Image: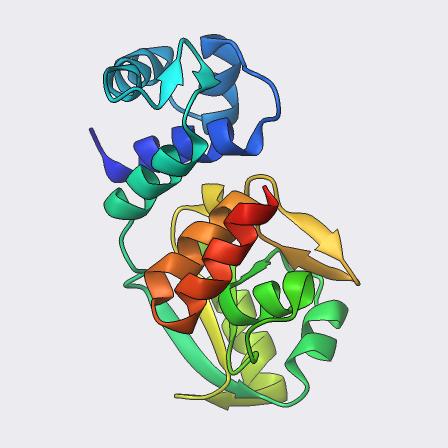
Length: 189
């Protein structure tokens, strides 16, 4: 089973407060009902869920982290006042890692801004950022991946932030102090 589909299903399960029907999971995860049924059976065998209800949230997170890969497609920039830049932007994005964690629980120093964008918006983002900043290693990273990572995003202080489950997974992928921050967020759930 492809990683993106599994991650989509996990994202939907962990963002939902109540158990969902297989059809609803399929609709929200944007994958076929067949994929949902096959993957839910796998999760049920591992005793992470029963039917579609989560029975072991921590183990389900650990499983998601184990199958999730660090993003390979990204571009780096140097942007002056990146948060103000994002607040003014009309393009779709979702903040993650350091800055998103700092907004939510103020534990990590926001040394870099990481945002997810839609692949279709890459040229628009590049033009916008290079108009206001510089291309190359810097304080601002755009990550191009499955746009479903934006599922469950929310606005806080005028900034779009990934869902809490997505942030926990992203922080774990970063490693080091980010894993500590992810553990702290897990305790809040």
